[in-house]
Image 1 (cartoon, rainbow, N blue to C red):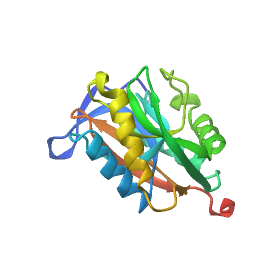
Image 2 (image 1 turned 30 degrees about the horizontal axis):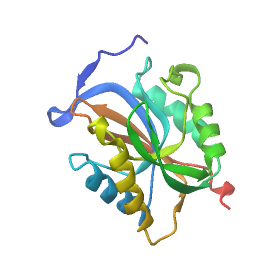
Image 3 (image 1 turned 180 degrees about the vertical axis):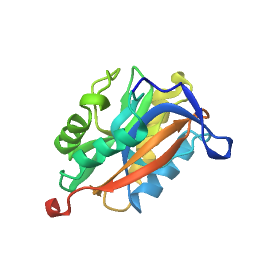
Image 4 (image 1 turned 135 degrees about the vertical axis):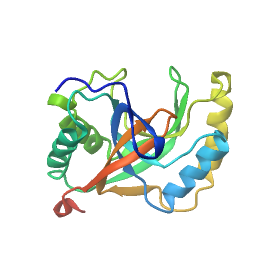
Amino acid sequence: MAEESTLRTGGNGIELVNSYAVVSYIPEPLGSYLDQMRRELVPDCVPHAHVTILPARSLAVSAEEAWRLIRDRAEAFPVFEVETGGIEVFENTFVAYVAVRKGWDELVALHDALSQGPLWFEEPYPYHPHITVAQDFDPALLWEIAEKARRLWERFPYPRSFLVDSLTFVQATSDNRWLDLAHCRLARSGRR
């Protein structure tokens, strides 16, 4: 199928963009703390804490076909744990993020399994599992924001790990938000 037009109109006047991703949302209490951190660091953002499995990409197949491929491949993967590390930065894209200490290999394997065939996309950067806490700010503030993020992250009093047990297929909107399209679970037999 040929690539769809760049913009499509969704329900309620929302303009949907041919840009899709796959994420795993981070559960409570870690998820809401990370969302609060993002709002403190970049007040205009609309966060929903997640680790990205497939970074944003356009599709040359229908969303339905892409979702079928994602679901079929993902359901073969066992549930796994991600343990977070400290605050780091991507200097070239001016992003502050929480590093992944445990679960890195599983995230890369899942990314690589999904990013094949019609879902393959020439990503601008090598896949690097992380949890974004600040982006889209004045680049001159990178180190100041990273230091503030470190202070906020040090205050988190709960475990800094979570299970990746489900994936969500999302689509971008013209106002730089993401809509959830579908969810699937990973294989429960892999739970440790």
